[in-house]
Length: 577
Image 1: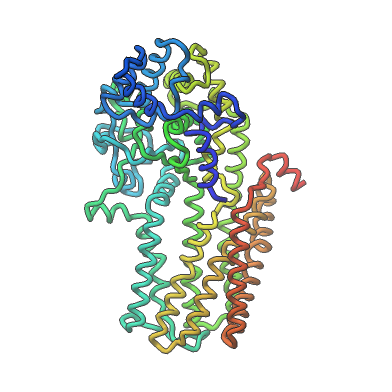
Image 2: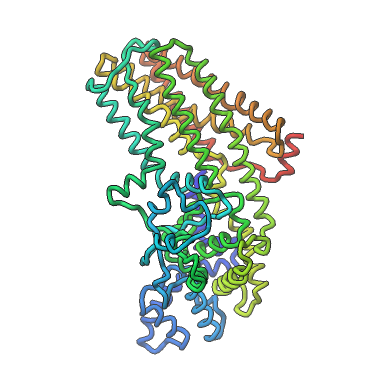
């Protein structure tokens, strides 16, 4: 599924989730078609030379002349404020108060990401703060990211989600570079090559053995290493460090300016969990951010997704490390080894995939009956503040009349959330737990180092044709076998989600054997036989290339197809009874 395509479609009609109403030609359509308020103000300031500004527009023009109007004004228009100048001024000032640090720039503080991830995210352990934790932040002009999370979620899942979002890509690139350097060193004779019981030529081993330790070291400690080199990463908002936790007066000011923090951030990193949309503050954070930023600037990272991806990478990498060792020292049939290892891998993955599937099911079920009054607020005295801010936001955007009561404004917010929040969280509620890109990375971590070790054998007499066919074999596994087996395993493993206990393990074993182990073994055998025939003739080599292409296209189509998952628990139960 292409999340960027989905975001683009909805952004054509709206700036954010609160502006993404169905485009049926009504008032919503006319609102989304209006230019941003800042643009309108610029035009009216220009026309002031001809004496065309009224009193309310002059107030807004002064705001514009004092400095650039922040992006918060991009989500509502002058026509949203009604007919009277007083009401229009009131809501413009109210929106300004919610989303800017006008008159109190010292409240805008940020923390270096390295300080958040230091000591494996120890600061994420509890919400309790002190003068020392507040001292980890400093006054800034802009934030690179706003980290939105729940303190009810344990520290380690949040730490894994943050390291996945900020460290994963860089760790992957550096790991592949290290493997490439090891391959050159093996080819040059600096690192050893070994005779293989399976292959008739020597192969390297260091690329495979170094890859997983290098990746894990960088994944968990990259920010610490970068800090030693003087690079501390982006500046982020974390409530515990950027809002004073002991001085009640400063704390209240910071809480009231939460919308301004969101407006000052370039993106919002949501650490999504099953309790995220059940908490009042995080719901308000999403609403406020999407009122001033497009959906594509909200990055959703599921705390379960990060753990699953890391587990899959580590498991398959261990498999790839075991393979060449077996080839060198023990002569064991490849298919038997693959079957055993995939069974062990699936025992850890399938239950986690089922937990993730339940999370997605509960997400849609919860949103279907969402109401802000049901959200939990850990400090009940904060609830009136959040309600008031939401009501002001809805009035300022024109979704309720200017004189609407707080109750009416909250009801309008509930309707908007039920309709549009699924679009905002579409990136984390994809058809499969792993995207096609994720499966490619998982397969690459497992197979590219092995392929590089084979490439290093070229310097020890390995024919170029042998290496080319080995590389083709690795590509077939990465582009087709790994994605297809993961997709089939999830399709079968996500059935009967209401089953628990021993019955659930029946589904796990069923999905593992019929969805992952057997198809994986069959496809690997097919690849090996095609590889053997490819050594014999160019025609069979062409057939092998064609099979690679077909497998890749099939995988892409499966992962990009429309989501037909039924989120209703009653439907799921009916399928199993």
